[in-house]
Image (cartoon, rainbow over all chains, first blue to last red; front, side, top):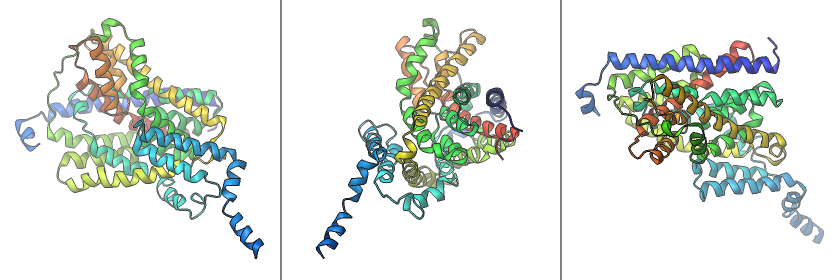
Length: 48
Length: 382
């Protein structure tokens, strides 16, 4: 698929920025979930 | 016989004669000297700039064969840069050195790490507007990742002829973060915003979460952006080794011996791509200017995103921490703490900024991975 520079640039801007934000947003939710599933316990501190 | 002796001795001065014929090489010898000066005297990323500067000098000595077929730097280049192996090995070391605890303690800071990458895509757009071919523009934009290995990985794969300029821009500007960021941060935030005090209420992170983090990021990130899997996987492997605590020898080797040897080889190889005739072009200056713009735009977008969070949370988040959402770890976090404390002595932003900064470290890799996968999706790369 051959596309002009303008279309390419806008596609990269929207898909790239959007994709990065959505991916990191998703990962942040998953990490928050992991934090809730496996809360910190005193033993964690002792293990270092 | 006298003629033979004179001819033989003449061979010893050919290099000096050629030096003045090939003026580009002469200039690049000076550039190599400046890079060495920056590394040695100004402490600007010395681990990279010293070998880069020396490689630059080596390749610009007339009749130098270090980058010709079977030349010693060409051999290193072909083995580690051409194959994209060196940046990946460095990533294992970075993963082994980085504590992602602050971002895991405050997962919302991942979003600041995303905003800090927007400069990549905006710069890509400007590079295209200036007439650069698509993959050259991608490699120029990636300077905005503020992440040397990522920039080298992408550029060596898709625009190897720009490698010298992109790598020098990435590493030099990264070391200028403490100078570049504060004016932008001051300009974009109001007095009230700068003085916002953020309480640190994050709880410690469990060992299980720290162990699952690299595995989840690799699997989920790899499924979303498989083209960037090598980048993600290597940094996460290093982090898994560190957090597991059971392979201390491997972790130590990754962050010391392997990282040191590869950094030396990588620096020499990059410096050796800076041969005068190929490097001294208007294009190089434009790339350096665009790289500068990319890093400034990262800071602008990061702070603006911080302002959005400030509004959304009713003034609980200091927008200055947005500036830390770049990959220059932990330099950017320290800059945020310094600027914040200048406006409010009670403001202690470091831990929040460290979260954003660690998010930026992941963000830069994710942004590159997303970019490569979008390119593959569009059929621009295979």
